[in-house]
Image 1 (cartoon, rainbow, N blue to C red):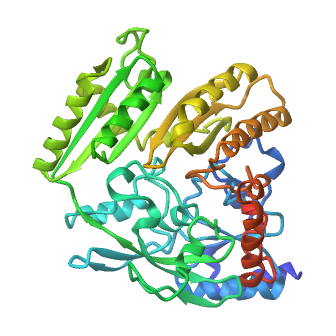
Image 2 (cartoon, rainbow, N blue to C red; image 1 turned 30 degrees about the horizontal axis):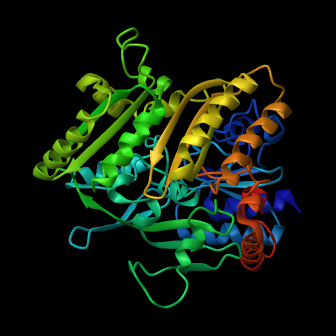
Length: 456
């Protein structure tokens, strides 16, 4: 590999103002939001960071990478907790944040086409000004990009009403690892074989670089109601949510939190010690629709041993839902584990987590459960700066994730695999992982596209 020649070629493609090579400039790109205390051995500087502005420039960058056999690491907002966007040694980061335009907007067909580097926040503000919303609403909302969200198959606060991010994606434009540009048709349904766009949702840039996306949008809701109730336990709050869903109600947001989650949104000493769980529900839509759903929900909650925490606590949650993310990992010690298990295993797994916390003396910063029809994503935030050594902590963490897999669950529900669970992907997929590996080999014969991530 001739590094000097390669950097010259890249500069010709994107211009001197769109490439970083100085070590001081490269330092922020040595990590995303993964905890460096846990993964110090992965702190590597890239050779360069490039900022394409057009899809054509991305094609030429990928062609150059194949010419010099240099790995590429696609990067959006750098908000990932799994290390999906961290560089290898002698790799080039392709930062897509300058590809941040709204390409096309159709109010009648309710879709928008955007470049991959636009942030969710900028897209939402643009749509709101015209009376519409894109309901993917992650905690990293201010800085997460559309492309990064798709690449990790991310999760948002509003899935109960609008569906998962994958349900909001109509089409993708992707530069394959060989430099070939493909575009999937933006049809919501087709009976013509494989759904090609699905190959690039959640595969963390290992199969190509997403450059544009066509997304579903919705009219802005007329009304939003937020309910926050405290229960005697996490388990009781979860049972109440199941009753609400069985009634045919589908809150926009449906979140069960443990004691730490309840206390985060109320004044200290304001709540009796007997309440150790909470249920947060958000309804939004047409005013009449929201009122009916609220009334039906309150009928169910009246039969439960729970108390209303009031409008202030409910409003505090909604206003802080995007502000909690920037506070995490300021010191680089927070670790976020986002497993999911079948619904009938949720209580058993929650109790296993509590035992695990006690066993390893890990500081629990909050356990929450995101509800879906068939499963529950149990998300945990821990302070990894415990008395355990790094290797001991990683081994203990694997024990927790393996328990979820044994129950028929998944390593990651929303954050992605990155480097943190790359050794467990094959355990989850079994023989099907050979199919994933074969697809990677066909699409990326030189193994230049984000190698080492997703176990590939």
